[in-house]
Length: 330
Image 1 (cartoon, rainbow, N blue to C red):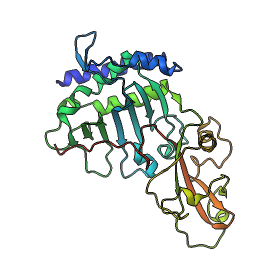
Image 2: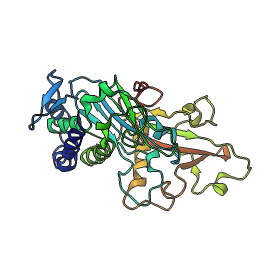
Image 3: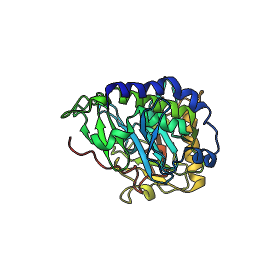
Image 4: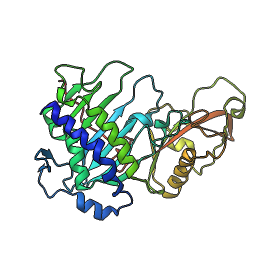
């Protein structure tokens, strides 16, 4: 595998993805999945003669995952760490889920990765091939390893097909004998996050969401409304203790909790999505002020409850996140 092949693959992303993606938006799930599904052949040949590895094998299993682990200088919740600050997950039926730190693009957002507006779609055969080529998907099993950076200011990209994984930072210029042909692949991945998000559709309103609820330790008897901007009474028909990690209201950022009730999930998703509207409903948008919703229970008016909401993926484990095999030492 040569650096030139990586560059040719990335040219596909920059030159053709946006146009190809435009036709996928709003397509029927079943018809799109049929088009993108493999017939069992694991290798293909592009129009230019380059061999490539199929992503879509018709299964319901995870076949491709790319996620970015945010650097330590970015304040993120467990919500962002569970799936990545940006990510792309593709199942064997060509259904994908994607989130990008740059989407939606609003200058006023503050740590938007803690809210993660996921979009979903189906890869066409053309997009499957372009994605496989540009990310050197056929090379992942051979070069699986940890080429990430220990620098706390670095962002590391994790690539996995569900069996083999590699971690890269600084375009895989770290670690022992990094795969030089991967120079530029991280940049290509960022392009896919954006173009597939633009082409995808929002998650259905009633699909599960994940929430993180934190009750920080406070040393004040003052009401929450006097110490936290825009605090409001807890409005949901759900006991906060029932979604804590230890049965108590006071919890730490350990893991998110799933909300599977369709009505409540729709209510929470609508609450979150309103904050990303072109014109926020009021000055208490958490993206503009405190980065979280601030609630309190009428029975405990001096104890704040901080909450974040994100879309939950069908691929997730019960306790949140998509489990991937760790990259072996290079």
